[in-house]
Image (cartoon, rainbow, N blue to C red; front, side):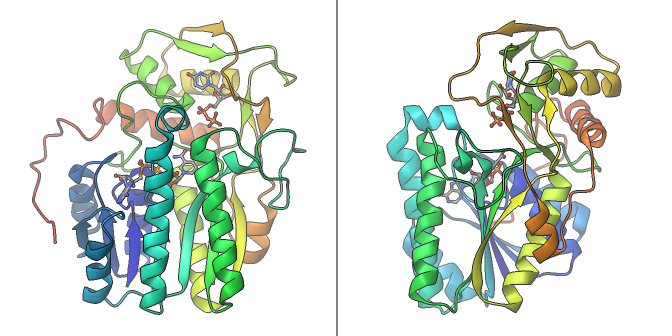
Length: 346
Ligand code: NAD
Ligand code: UDP
């Protein structure tokens, strides 16, 4: 059985879907601080598969331990965490506590039960500034905010853990910019309040929830002056977890992998592609740069291909098509959906 922490969230639900398709037995744990039971209900409906769900907070160590006692877990895919950079600047203690103590609790209990296989969600944010692009896993690590620091600290903790016991098998996945939605239109990103990220903001402008996009700076040294990022389709990202999981189940070690496409797109290119896909005009104005933003960031994903046999397949056009389908089908995300919520807590 595979334990997925944060399995009701944006990346967690797509990863869980993929794991169920691949025939894995699943236990999902989530505290639903940033997700909804509706995503779990849809997962059940679309896969027609059984899995266990625990409404548990990773900070509740005894509840977490109970999950390990009740299930024969062989590996953990650990996605639970708080993820907003801006929020982390305002609430650093909550971010450090949730992300770091949650992970420590999880690792301590895994150790107690002799389970040493772990896939961990890290982020390209650990690369900070001044790295040569495309960035490889060996690049200098640094970060400018508590969220990024929580990821860097966890990466160090996992490194120390592996050094102390070489039986651990840990894959650190550094995601670039996950976007888009499941091609069924049933699962996607459902940000609370005003989206911080480009793609959900653009989608909400296209559907008319927001009037215009603010483009943060057009004077970067990039091809059109706007910021360049490596957007990766959420389904490709989910598949990366399956490859990493089967790899760690076979051998011990600790490795970090970039999960990106290797190709960067500018803000204006994203706007143009979204307009093409949706048939809508995306009004925008150029404003000052956003604090902490860098000009460009894109991956060298060759290590994931060489060692895991994983490669992103979908391009920006499909990312926008799927994001737009999700936005049209679910203008309020998982809220106010017609399907009745079933209570399926374990
Ligand atoms: P998300 O907020 O949609 O999902 C995270 C899930 O974890 C949510 O369902 C939330 O309720 C749950 N959670 C948070 N703290 C918990 C706790 N203490 N106990 C139990 N459950 C808890 O975010 P996501 O986009 O799916 O991100 C998943 C992981 O990937 C996070 O660790 C995030 O930092 C990382 N990541 C995300 C991105 C991105 O752009 N989405 C990029 C890089 C890394
Ligand atoms: N961006 C923008 N307007 C927005 C949100 C983002 O111009 O409302 C830009 C941002 O400056 C960056 C790119 O879009 O160049 C991707 O930003 P996002 O927040 O999605 O990802 P991250 O900054 O974490 O890579």
